[in-house]
Image (tube, rainbow, N blue to C red; front, side, top):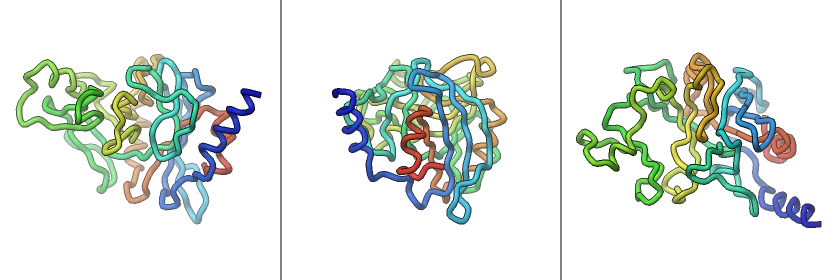
Length: 239
């Protein structure tokens, strides 16, 4: 009876949601289950009202501890485990994506996609007590304090030499402690290592993904365990 009640509450919480009609690009990540750190990624484009596969499938890695519901475009279910700062889980749900960061002076991308070459003055605030939590900041000086140095975006780390932002728990509605700095970035060890919560994939595939993205198409990232995806695909109008 308790299990049935929980399913009813969950269904009620997410009923009525579907992918925004203006979104014409969607990256779908499907994990085997909530505890898996592995994912299969496929990119879709909507043409004549129908989703068509354009890239993938590609293997990827997720958080070391699997997945938990994140804060994105989808309604937050009641009574479920939510993504938290430092839990080593990737956020599940539907998220806007866009904005790239990297070490290269320039990359192959859509003219409308924002790109920032990372310098020593670039910070991404993961301190949940800061009013700038989960924000990108650019200092007008070299990092001097211990706090500034701790928030500094990764330097001299190939896995973080190219990344694409996933809008989980994003400003201006970022909730303290609910997770920050979620990106697509390059995997470690040829895909042999999980992440702290990001989605990683082979560098060549990440570059293909970034080159394909068109901000005008309102791209989305749908990340779900397989059973959740199958259950929600009809109502959410998933690819």
